Image (cartoon, rainbow, N blue to C red; front, top):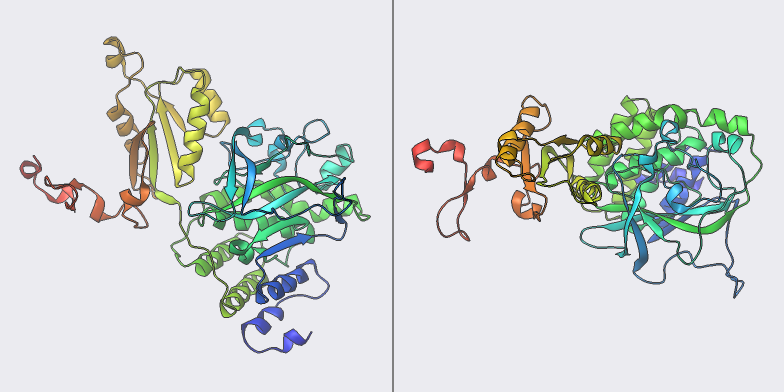
Length: 460
């Protein structure tokens, strides 16, 4: 209560928090940041850390090294990711986390596929871990529909072969405030909305945060259970009512966040704009926007260091030219290419000599692709190669009247793109400065020249 009497940004934020509300946790987050916390372990009173079988002591929550070892990279086409199946629940399918859109619980494409494993540092130039969500055994965080229809208790794989799961950068998966770690670059994302029910608040927080994560190289990881949940008594029908927005709005929210963009290139301003846009679409109320503004002002006043923004490219479509599609692993290659490109591009298209079965598979996995055909090349005996210029032209015509796509970047399937070099570090990309080509024999010192400004004879 004394905090409410403080002058300045901290007191202003504290006064926005309602009493006797789930969102009072926000004051604990603020206190921890003020005292230099580097990690938050956010948990509920009915979650218990498991005990080590040998020592009888609680297991370690934070990794003892600067990296997470043996992280499984998930390959996924859709923007909604159901992480339960790949974490091997003990009950028959389907199983899903609280907040996952109900319309997708039987959609196998949202379950993803394990691609490979690697060690992931907490902080790097390309990716940093923002949130680690631990799954819970016993009575885990599922919605009331799940509790009423699916068997409990349940567990997840915690064998020696169990691994953490890296959520694809373009995808959204709900994480909660019951057993999660936020790292320093993601502490700004701990703010809980207070104008929605508590059963909705932490899920909305997770989805809002992931929209900004994708533009700041922060990643979400799900980890095997180190938690046992012995759930407090709940009224399932009461939970069902409180979770209504999760059932009716989650899918539409993911669609909105996946396509959202802003011209704001300063981190706090970008977050603020997102919450304003969410308010205007009735996901939160005005009091949440005001609280968010006061929260950001308080963080700035405390000297909190926001992560660097690296927005995805939304005004350029990436077209991949695949000359062949008849290898046994062609679909896997296309899916991985699509996923890597979507880390930087909002819009991707794969062009290849797909057959109808392959096209149907890609469509089911929400991968934009078309069947590249060139009958003249086929008649000349080139069974695999299809005219790339025809494919590029087809893609250009598709976006000829687009209000968002201003250019198409063409690349072969075996091209390695240095986007920093291509864009010269500019955002948005492309700029008029780099439309064209380098002129002159001294390529190291040549400058880009806009070919549109040069007479046709001079271009030759």
